[in-house]
Length: 86
Image (tube, one colour):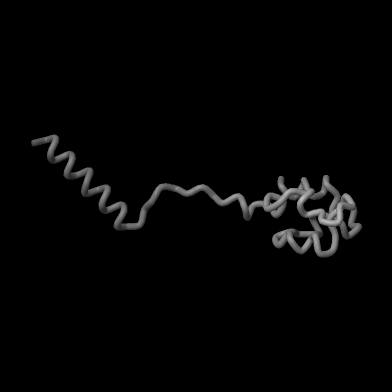
């Protein structure tokens, strides 16, 4: 009897939790964490000049160029690009 009562209580509690919309915590998506994670520097450097500039930078939608472009030359070096991932 006690086992049946406990099982019923657990079943009821589980059902109420799902009905209330409680679910296990979900991992935070990392794709939004840094623009650099969408593609590698080599993939984005389409003209293979060793920097990202112009149209190449447009692929980095969430990029804050003021923070990423450490030397303020309007381009991203591999080191500057790497720093966007941290």
